[in-house]
Amino acid sequence: MLAVPTIVCEDGYEVQINTRDHPPPHVHVRKAGGEARYALENDTVELLTQSGMKASELKKAAALVAKHYVKLQNELGKMSWVRSRSLPLQKKASAKPLKRGKK
Image 1 (cartoon, helix red, strand yellow):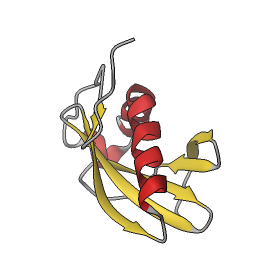
Image 2 (cartoon, rainbow, N blue to C red):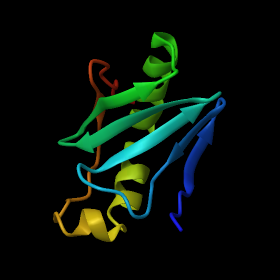
Image 3 (cartoon, one colour):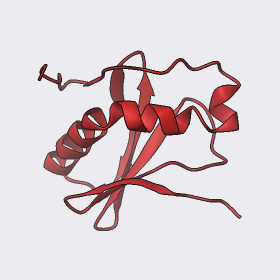
Image 4 (cartoon, rainbow, N blue to C red):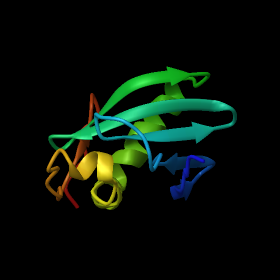
């Protein structure tokens, strides 16, 4: 059975990581029946696929993933399918085409 823990739950969005997934390192964002997959590599968040989400929801989802990038990257680093790629821990992120501002 595939385990899909929710790592972040905010504003109706659920960010999940499949424990037995495949490269590239990515997360699944679900909201109201829609889903998007975002890759987390090289300090960026890149949309891979989406189904049933509006452009405004995709923008918010990408911003949410960028906001929690470090936490998500650390969780991804615990997955055997990611560890085998020697994925380094990240300290910051930006969403493509969104850029995170410094706080």
